[in-house]
Length: 76
Length: 152
Image 1: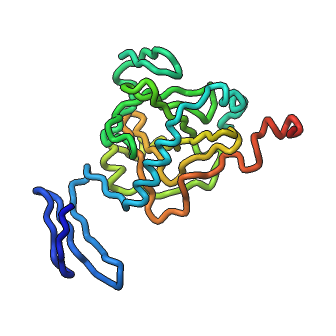
Image 2: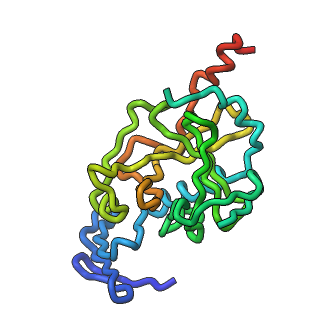
Image 3: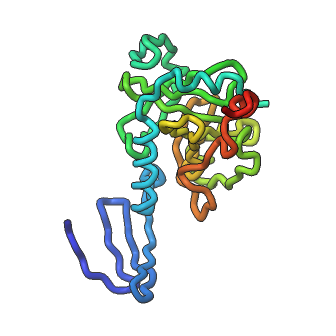
């Protein structure tokens, strides 16, 4: 992993169209500004991990017979 | 196209009917096309079957029959990216996790799937500053038909 030291107001440019700006530092919290094309999805790491893990657990094959009891349930 | 699926066998579906996820889904970045298969007429439940991985299908639900207060603001960038409009509102579904005890099934309200039903384009978004989590019980009081049976 590349590790760079930056000060408040300084930037990191990734490729041609992603710019990270160090906006503010308070104690152990760093506020980052991110400019990127809209097709680049940006997530907080731990939230992305939680969603990915939940998707993977939800994708476990479920026996269709387990859904039999849901048959009577309607949108009404 | 013909989709092979472990759960449903072979499914013939028009390419234009597939739901496209240009960005994939978190955890499944390479999955870009799914068939939307309703579970039963008028059921809130449906399946998303991957067009490329026979083993991959999600159970999804219309959240509103279960979570009447469920509400979030869709960011303008997402509305624009999906091409949604007042006369083409989004279809919202949530991925369901079915554990060993079916009645403990949960829906991921933190990361809804937003679908443009006309263009068949979709994305799983992550809500910002949201009170919701990845696991909300659909049947906190147990399954309704179990209750009707007197709950053994």
